[in-house]
Length: 536
Image (tube, rainbow, N blue to C red; front, side, top):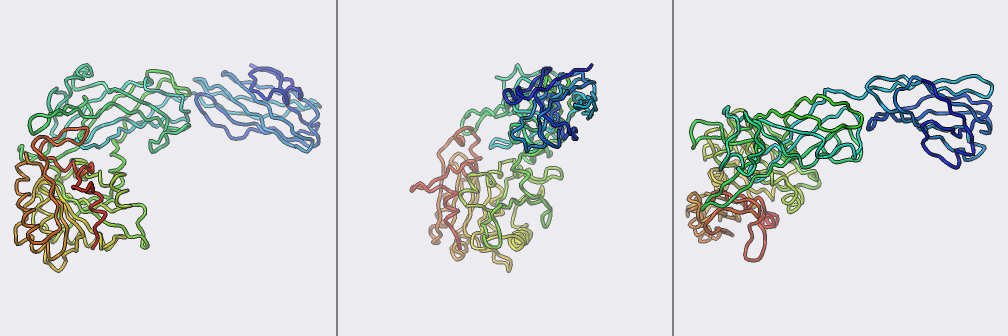
C-alpha cells in the first residue's frame, strides 16, 4: 500500500493539524538533505514519534511525501516554518499498531526527483504474557490483600483502563493448609456470599483501576496498572468483644501457626490470583496475566528486618530527616503473645497488631520524625530472661544511628509489657535512660519497682479496658507509681469492646486506642503529644 501527500506551505501555517491522508504543507529548499526518523514510543496502541527534516537555504519549495508498508492508519502532523533562517522541522508521526509488526517506509521526493527514505519499524500489539504482583495492606483489624500491580509492558495513558477492565478471582490458603471459604464470625462476611465461586475461590470486587508508575503511584502516563479491591473488615460489638467479618478471599495473615489455641502465632497466607482482561486496552491484545510476587504493605517495606541477639528478629524504621545534626527520638515497642517469630513470619509483629502505625504519618508528624524499633521474640515470648539481649540490641541501634539519647521511649502491649517492665527497672551496667514508657492491655508494677522508676524519673502511661482481665493490675500499678512520686497517667476505658472510630475489637485490644492516637488526658493532650513532650 502506497499513499502520496503533496505539500503546500500555505495550508501548513494555517492548519497545523494531524492529517491521515491529505495534502500537507511542509516547506523545504531545493537543498533538503535530512529526512530521518527520530525516537518512537508505543502509547495506547499508537507508535508515535518524529521524522526530522533538514535543508540548506530558504524553505520556499514543496515536495511529495509518501509511505508504504503500513497496515495501520498513519497520521502526520506537519511542522510550521517561522522564518527564512529556519533550517529544520519535525513531522509528528502516529502509526496505529496492529497484530503484526509493520515496517513503514517514508519517502520524501525532492524537487529534482531524487528520493530520501527512512523506515519506522512498528511493533505489533503487545500480547504478553503480562506479570502482576499481589498487594497487601495493613489496618488495625489485620493484614489483607488489597489489589494488584500489573506490569503492562507498554505505555498507557490515564484513560486506558477503568474498574471494569479486569475481572479477578482469588483463593487463599492459610499457613496451616486450610483454604479460606467459611462464612461467619472471623470468617467470610455472610453479606458477601454472592462473591463465593466454589472450591475456595471468590470474586474480587474491583473498585478502581488506574495507570501508575512502578511504585503504584497514580500518573497520567505509565507502564503499570494498579487496581484496588474491596477488602476492609466489617466488625460488630458482641458483649465485651467484637464479631468480625472479612471480604471473601482477602485476609492475608492470621493466627494459624502453632499447636493449641493458646499457642498460635500470626502467619502469612498464600494466595492464588487469577486476572482476566474483560475490555480492550489500547496497545494490548487480549493477553495472559501471570502471577508474580506478593508485596508487603508499603510501610512494611520501610522497615529493615534483621536477626535479634538471642533469637527472633527486629524491625527498624528510620526517619528520613535523621542526621548527625538532627538526631531523632526512638520508640521501642514490644508485641503481644500472638506475634512471636516462628521461623517464617519475619515482621509479623508489624502487622499482627499494626505497629506499622508508628511509621505512619500521624505519629511521625507528632514527633517530627522518629525511629521505631520493634523486636520480635522467639516462640518463648517476652520476659526478664531476654533483658540482656534487648539491652544489647537497643544500645547497638542507638549507637549506630542518629538517635537522640535524651528521647528514648519504650512500650509494650499484653505480653510485651513483661519486657517493658524489666527494661525500665533494670539496674545492669547496660541499662538505658528512658524518657517515657507505656504499658497497655497488661502490666504489673510493684511498689519496689515503682521506687526504681521514680529514681530514674521515667514518666509512665498505663492504658487498658475494665473488661480486660489482663489489665486488672493497671489501677494498682498506677497507685504504686503515684505513691512513689512517678509522673504517671492512667486511662482505663469503660466496659465493652474497644472502638477506634471505625472498627470494634475485643476488650483486650486496647492498644488500638494508642495506635489511633485516641488516648487523651483531662487537658486534651494526646498520647502522641505526651511522648513528644518528654525528654531526659
